[in-house]
Image (cartoon, rainbow, N blue to C red; front, side, top):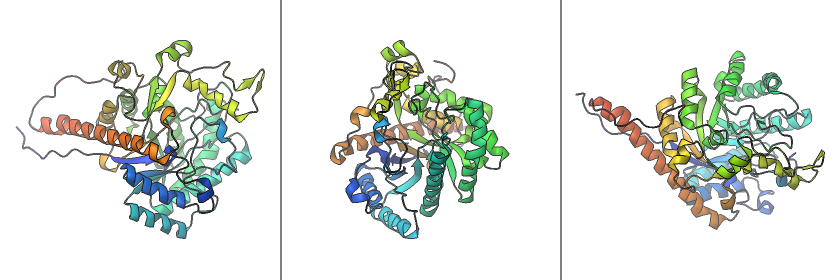
Length: 414
């Protein structure tokens, strides 16, 4: 029998994406005073029990190329970068962080970095560089976002475009000491065409192909994945199998953080349309032409919403059969699999709660607060349970020569 060691479960860090409440600070107050929105979100995070925030940046509605009415999940420009982020603004935000005792996990800007129109793409890249500058000035080590896709090109041609226009962004991140953490949402409703994968970094196979391009140009360390299990469910995958595949392929190091957001598959919608969703008569086309009305264009998201709905963690009922069919996120196994299959340091890994559950996306500070507080408490409890199980099964019992009971969930098996 080996000498015993103290029981020391390692917990991950909690954060919340500020897009959960886009208009916490009304626009008539924050447009003239941009950093007021950050100050008030930091205080709100303290109230709901979030020790950190993921600070959402976006093009201001006045200059965005995508009308808000066309979006399924409106983004939030909590970080307003119409003007560059300078030392004065950084000092003000750091003072607010100290006053609220709430930190920053990272910055986030979710947009199409491979947009087909060169002028639109240039504006997005220039804005991303401002996000990079703000991240460096605020002392965070990463920015979370998408790769995107040029919808006018096929997948292999998008790889060529990635090498030409995205790799320079990673070089800019490297110069600032940052990593770029890619969320893997396929963004099926991003365009009114029938393409389902409008963000080419949607699964392990593409991640590996993209990382090999990055390695060739010396920016492999800048390309990482901000894994979101909701998107795996959307594509019929489960977390354990995704992580096992990455480990088997030698790329488990790619996952560097997590969005904690679920997806619940509607079996009736799945029976009607299958994975890949509705590809005709959605309402985003009028006859043979795309609709001009942005609200009608939002119907492109029926490619996703006819068979699935986002989950705010903790709000969906426990469904063991759903877990086994990969129709909802098995949160406990998600946290266990991360510890068992990925080379993570849990104490320096963020779990970022992302709220996109449509019926609960109330834009009212008081009404939303208990919902977010409850979800954050759920995520904290799940992670603590997984940390305890991992410590018992992989550290305590082996040290004393005691076998672990049972089999547990297995990769590649539903």
